[in-house]
Length: 297
Picture 1 (tube, rainbow, N blue to C red):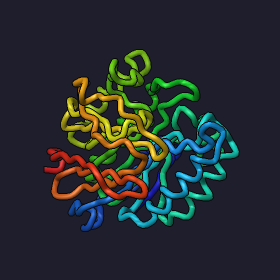
Picture 2 (picture 1 turned 180 degrees about the vertical axis):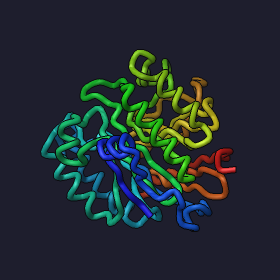
Picture 3 (picture 1 turned 120 degrees about the horizontal axis):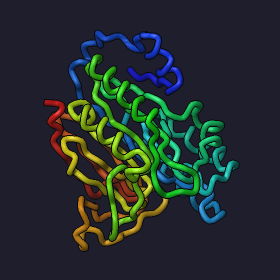
Picture 4 (picture 1 turned 45 degrees about the horizontal axis):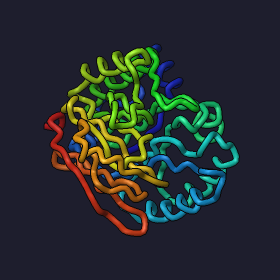
């Protein structure tokens, strides 16, 4: 069972005391059976004003269509540099996949264009069986840093509380990571002055319910941190290009799997574990990583 709820609809319903989904879930949802889905990011259609990104997205889409996974999350930078005509190109290719695709904006996606061409309103809830995805725009066009408003933090808080009443678990999806990542890393994150503290307060309050924070943005392959465990913070590879910044060699905090070809990631949650497998386009699955999820018991 999957449903999508806009932030605007959710806020209105919650303020009116309306329950958006039955509290008594179906038996198959309560059982928390295995889930699998796909994650893609940073397609950047129109990159360098050429057609190469569209060609790469077409190849990626063909492999996403064949890959096992119930739905696809796109973690931002749908197009490059806010080129409005590229949204139609992106969508025409996306629609060949044959699976639901749920996008968030990146810093190359102006809010008003994403709202016009992808989803209005932008912040939304996607429920899939016992898992809830909270999709938020924390990027600003032309700015590498992340921003989260007090209203958005409160929105996350409310939907995590509701998820608990429905025995659902939560994954937050935002383009820019919240985690500090200074040199030798990118240095792009939600700074304290831009909403990092209230976000982590909400995450800490719901750490028994939130499984992970998912992000794109870095073009570094699979990159992330586990120091806010049990909540995992994971950056996903670009479908267009990735760069090796030698983070493991320089002992940067966290981890960076050594695979930097373009691709997407298969995510499986089963037997109390979160498993990632990086699928390189035209090659197949290569590196992977997994964690135990104490939240699932």
